[in-house]
Length: 324
Image (tube, rainbow, N blue to C red; front, side, top):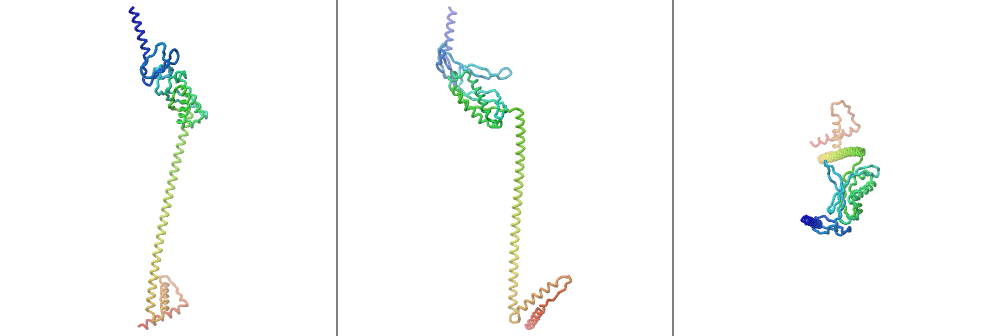
């Protein structure tokens, strides 16, 4: 009798324990009553009818670490559905570009379950379906691009992949928030060729920069020489102008002095003789003096007109005699 009571008590406790459900924040539980969807339990405490009400699980992929820390993927059925954003790391896969180059790509997907009922009833294996959809979509996108375009268009690929996955997974109650390509690995021979190409490109840029520097240096040097030549020419021009102005002023002053001397001479001679003959005779005598200057042997020819000059000289003599 005691054993029966204890068994009955254990059944009652188990009944109430299975009937009492505590759902944590950001989790839900889908309940089926007699095999049909009944309700979705949100965060908080709930009571269900055991045996009649049964939680419906969802099958997800999870990565676990085995012996030696080596990760591997297992399929797990969970009755509590996590509504937080989840990240799924897809294994590396080979895709072919438009120019027939096979490259390895692995991607990360950040998704969130927004409708638990759709995630349970609209798809059998949610994460497996997202993985296969990502792989096929990625093959289609990369197949439309060349290798060089693929390597420099990660943002474009990420955006295209996110939009397509978000539209396709909307009926599964999933929101794809972000897609990131981790690695794009071309074959080893392609990598070697790319490294050689990059090295050649860097050397070419270095040569171009050096040539541009030399060109700029030559231009600056030529501009400096030109400006220096212009400055020298302007200086010589200014010097020549000043020198010519000085000579002109000197000649003007000399001419004014000679004119003043002549005026005074004419004024002194007027009334005592002919000023013209006096001035001519003086000029002629100065010229003869210059002709006989120096140590060289010279032969002086007396011009025919010298008789007229001599008469002028005689007139000067007579003028000074009369003055006395």
